[in-house]
Length: 89
Image (tube, rainbow, N blue to C red; front, side):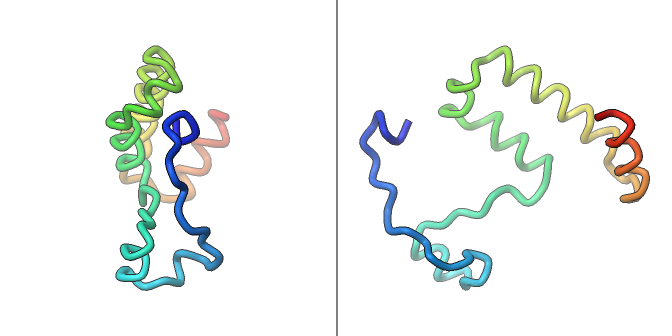
């Protein structure tokens, strides 16, 4: 998408963005990745570029599976979560 639209990628980031202050990240235009699965799924659901790249059927199926997984894992202890995911995948 960026290549098609000739977007400028901006200046390279040559340090770990996690070591920058919030103000420095904002100044450089660095947006953090989603901090959790629920936020990531909502971000995908609203990202037109990714939805178009993946196609509506794949996005719908991926979101349905991951949201069901989120519901199944929400509130579980880490050991139970790991066990479930190892059994499933």
